[in-house]
Image (cartoon, rainbow, N blue to C red; front, side):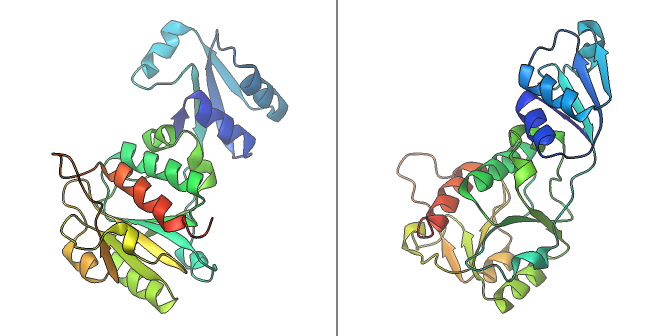
Length: 232
């Protein structure tokens, strides 16, 4: 997988993740990154500005890393963690939203993120770039069926909190102590009906302006920090 940008490069290099190759623009001059590359003795290819132009569709900042594909975590590893806080993404499609949510989850110390295998954005270079390197410090699991997952989470002591604009319950009125799994829905369709019916609580974020919805990553940020507030 190709990833790009200075923040991402620093996180990847610091975490000793396996790097197949690094491509640098000849005038690249970030002293910290150059020092990390030299220390790890990683194979590096240098291209002039013209040669680097093939990567111009990316905000590469003069550096591209060819790394191994993202390694997903076994979802069962979350089950026995005391007061675990999970975020489940119900078929999110926008890699920028996923990257932003990953960044928020890392900042908030969320236990892990769970995504479905099908009809959902996967971990790619855009997600890595948008997360500003936070992806290197977040555990993500991929599951086949969200309903089966929710049943397993409940069997292991989790309360499931969904989000929708149609609820009468303010998100601030829910008790988030203990093990909680927060579900964030698809950008256009929200949480699917079958998943919503499996929730223990369904919360809404009040809207006071003329706009009646929030971007998925913004809604996730609000809910995530409310969910962890009692643990901090």
